[in-house]
Image (cartoon, rainbow, N blue to C red):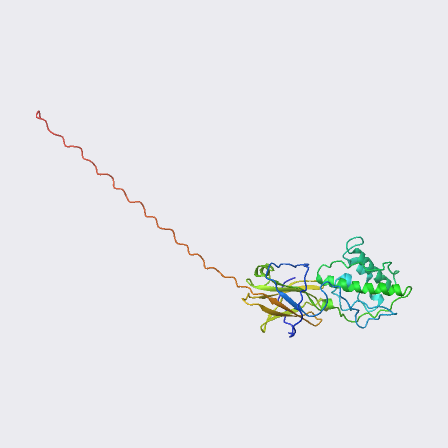
Length: 323
């Protein structure tokens, strides 16, 4: 898609604990090779996607179990996850999950999706519960956002299998969320500081500047995130590096400075502002050497003209006596 400037989001004056989101690029990732920066983010989930609490309001105990925190507003969650959203058992799109699963049976991660589809079909009443008693480890996602979603899905599957073991022959009653409350959709991914060379390689912003690049989930209806970066009270708008289904990556560019600076990123993806602080290391601005003056070549004088030797007159003839 065409890269463009995105509009400013509201600024939040918040500073949080030091943490790095990490990043598997995915996509468009990497590009480092530059000065290392530190990031501080709001507490909105685990980078690995493994920390997932049961969503508030979902029924548990004897009647059912806590479902995923994904509401029907969640597509653009990629298709294999969107099949689990809905307002009732009948809304679950297990066939869609099967068609869009990223790993087939027998492939790495395939066992995880076998269990996921089995639980989905059992909730719909289309099939018996899977025989698995434990959830296989979730596979790596295509990016950090999907890895986080895999963690939330794995936690729900574990609750489902545990409930079924304690309630054989019963069908759970699930309070499906009316709206999303997924921490995975309210955090930044892989915030990194790019050197001048790495920033220029994005072919996105001005030349000769450093950049901060980060990923974030898109919002409801695939809403494209907006972001600003604030340094010493001055705001800079973010540029969209790329936007895929459910996930976008943005970058903000800054002139190099000789002192360390803190940058406050404020991002809005339609699910509330997300704030993260990034430390830009000191970077000396590149110096431009003056062009070397080249002396013109010395002028070569033409060789002196050589005068021809003077003509020698023949000796005069002397008359003899006989004459």
